[in-house]
Length: 323
Length: 298
Image (cartoon, rainbow over all chains, first blue to last red; front, side, top):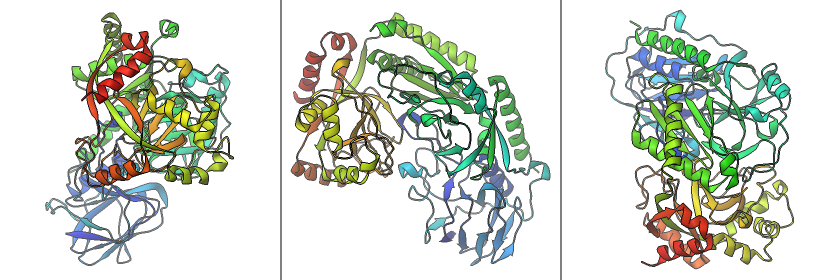
């Protein structure tokens, strides 16, 4: 069974739960930016929750199925259409042999996860099928989908049930104004205290440079740094540090303007001061924010972050317990 | 070394999955040595719940699963390793010396740097001319000699897959230093050799970059396709702790080495080596000669 890519969409790539253990060599985790939606789409179909799916950003692809196969789409609100006929999100439906699956413009959220019964059959590279485009690694030839690509699909397991859907309580709610919880730290002490406080008191808006590597933010007041003699090897800009590792979710502030939240295709290190880290439970949300939407950062403690992590895991557990 | 006496290790929680540890605010060989010693020991412990162990220049970070090991337990472990490394006076490192052939002043980085002249401090010259001048060398050739004559320590691998950050093994007053471009370029040729701050790098993939560009190496250092004999299953050639010696080559040799690399048959010169921090600190120039002898005595 295979699927032909007629139109690739804006930035569609094959993703799973990502790879671990190679960040010290500069290879980031990759994987679906909204893991919860990726897992939900797989579980609806009875796939292993980490099967490879297509992550579709803002504008979905157009795909032709050469055989009939059941699919499920979760995440951003982009109505799926089979030969033009609307199909539901968050529910198993079938694409008949020879039919075309396409998607409407995104209404809310930013990334949709299209799971296919059986999962996409690309080789595992360093333990994952996820695409890491900067390193030309994983997925289909290490890059986003292109017109003319053919995706091979693993055999159907027969465990998918037409009409099986997510309960309303597990369907994500999207917004135009998000709160992201951040544990302050790292090089936050380099900021003038009033400037640091203001970072959490203003709305920021997502710039057009928002992708799997990172989300750039605009619109807030430029951050100011405490004056200093630059440490040897750091560089002269007040925002420079001796090149260090970047945690996933860390917020760096090159030159104090336009903070960047690093996501799952992060550059693994560099020389810009980071001032805090988005908590793991909110990283899925980042992946669903559209350019120009508003964000307010909320400072929390590590204990708050761990409590949110527990709630996030309870949500995942509910997905796994779906009948 | 006085700065090492006053440097205090700083632990910072980065969200709920990362612990970031700064060993020194400034770059020193001592801090790097502690980073690599502590992270190697942590790797050897194979503790449950430790996901990523990433040494960097003068810091390191650990990704962990807080459901398995708490932030407090992890920090205690790292503090203990820090004390062990200090108490045992770990002064040696089992590593490799690697020769990296470089075509300096090559046509491809030249073409690229000319395209981005408006991003540069000195639009009228080249990156090499600029770097030579501000480091007090009277010619580009003298600068190339300074870059290629001394060994460099791989102090961090990252930014993008497999990119080595290298720290020059000479007394601080002789280290080459150049600022990064005023604004980053959107393009850098694959396997470009360049410098930003005090770090020399080799760009593993084509892409954005802000370091001054001096040349290219024909040696593949990242192998996502898995067809290079000298690169193992990790796809990455360099490891933190490797010692690199650049060697200037001409176009003819470059073309020959590149053609071998294209067949997956590049044979780098690599020699096992025990680095001794005290011996190096006492006589950096003599140690550089020793590294060169080790590399070429076989």
